[in-house]
Length: 358
Image (cartoon, rainbow, N blue to C red; front, top):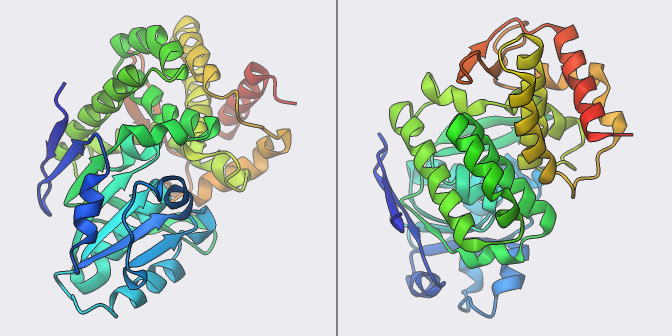
């Protein structure tokens, strides 16, 4: 499979490139028009491989969910507007999904849109969020309430950075890999069942293969429906419940792991309705369980009332009824409205039992 990929967008076509080193960062740092936003943890891990950045062109970000807000965006904009460069400013961001959300919003807003290069350093960002152009901020207790569509001009993936991820973050990234495998149907399930142990043992040849496959899979959806109005909505599979689990845990459950919990919950609901077989749900569940071992789950997070409240706060819910993407009878995805509270309760109870949460 190729080391590069081109994505078509109504804003601009852009490229994903897999690279073997960070030499391109050194080249970019020499340009006076570039401003760098770098995850502070990533910077400290890789500063020996990174160039010396002029202080006035560097912002080290505490990449926390609590920082994903307009205050951080304005802080970065304030520093960038002090540069001589204006509309020719080039924003370079290095980090995971939170870094991407913040800098994507800056890039889309400052001077009505500036050049932006992104280096994803988490598996979650590399295999999913780096393409598609979505940037989101939290606002007044609502996750991802503010946002824009604005893809980077270039995405550069340096797989070596995944070796320094914590086990928790590594497994969180695998959540989206498994999700794409489930969406791919029977063939996807067969393959991930065979390969999951290799990936958990950090077989990076296999891992890069799955990153490329996930991006290629998502590319079809975003080129067909860039603005999330039709086919792309199906990629929200597991997110109705996943976002709720993130919120009720106060983000102690990372996004990819929350998606895995959401996937098990959604499949429990499909099983209740007779859309999928018990055997199919269990096969997916076994793979999911293998990437959840580093998550400390508190039983208090699974009280039905707080989960329902969190679901209703999610921006994807458009009216009083609860909507979710579920696997249908032919194991393809479909949007279902009017999900009943008692169905969710039974699905959550089954999740608790399956994972032996106490």
